[in-house]
Length: 504
Image (cartoon, rainbow, N blue to C red; front, side, top):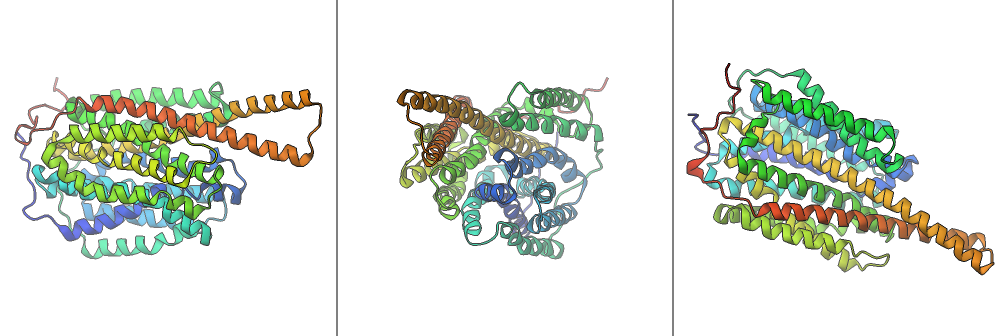
């Protein structure tokens, strides 16, 4: 029987340093969403290509987060934080002074490589710092960083893009990253136990091929179509690599990700709900700026400002939700939160070419309010069912599925949006040509341009609302799953389940 010990007094100073580092890393997750149209015009590239600044960041995080269980277990937390923050700072400098799109994308990838260890490291320190009966409130504070930082990103991004060059988005982060790094070197202490474990390079390679192939295939479908070998080829290869990866992890004594923790039912159920909610949340953070800027023509600052109420609501609700979780458990919170999220997402399918500012802000804020009641309760409940030695694997898996699901969800929704937009545009163009032939009057060049602009606006709107409808249908699945959640009893955590490979 393993001993599950927590520290007598939580290291609040150390947690504060980790919070700052995690906040900066999380902020970069969505910082570019509002700026994507501006960067697209600046470099003269397509939306599908510029979208890789967002999905590529999440992809690299999703690839590297599985290895975070190894890093957290093998290396002292002080050394791990300093290394991760150093890499993140280098990537931020690359992006902040990027002369072209390729350097910018490379900087984002390096940023993601450094940021990938921040969340698992902070979460593991939190888990050993607080007893299980107080984890809800503690993880609620963590959720304040995890949820509010990405939500604040679009507002801050909108202001910067409107008044400064988009490179300022990265340049302003550099001082905070450096300060966080210096404080880590100066004040950070080692509070977590380490042990020698082996990093299986083949597992890392398989996870890279799996997640990279699947995401690349879905991201490319918007431009090349589902019948292209550049779409079904990477998806097929990625899926095969994923199956091999899963089988290999279940056979290893020291797996990269200990997937046997899915034997714990509440962890598995929470993970499934988390995947669905992440897909809906991150896709909404890309679709909404696309609507308000490309269709409504709202300037970047006001577009970002529209998301600020949602960010504030999530920030305020996260600690409250943590305390409510300690008192009532996860089920009622998840059911109410997912009901609100689903209803608000369906509301966004009613967007029009001239939808009011108030309607857009209200729907987005209500949607974020619902999500704030879901993520941390289901994650904390699942982690509470794990033995303490499995915490690094639990947090690594949670972060992996969130990052990968968010990246794939964003890519899939943008693909659905592009495909629907193309189909609708073709129908509208054919209809316009038929009407022109019937009238017998040839339109002037100005009328042709005006008609073309209107057709593209209508087609893009149809694509966005179609994607929101799909997202709403997906959240219905999570809503149904929430009814099966059960509160983990602290005194009867299933510590008897053997997660080690049976000896032959």
